Image (cartoon, rainbow, N blue to C red; front, top):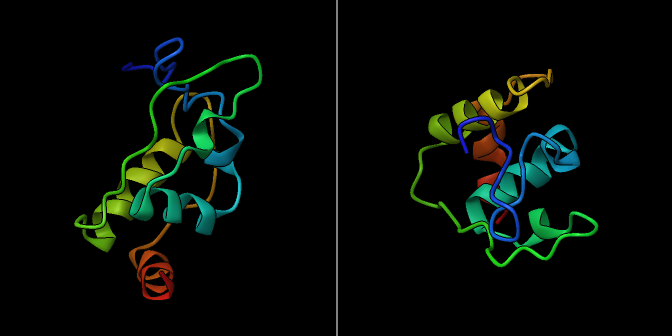
Length: 91
């Protein structure tokens, strides 16, 4: 959804996710490799997993994650392309 509220039982809300403001490296790994970790919202049974986006450039990953971390009522430090590159090389 445009307000990052997700879709009940289908897609978890980014606006309420503790992962969004958590460890930067974990969030970068989720985007690059995919994960069902965002589905762990208590009381919900989400049916979708986060797909992997390995073809996105480091800059695009950094921009998207910085946006998500600083919108929808959240405020967190920027993620840089260099940080994404470092995580990508370890995958």
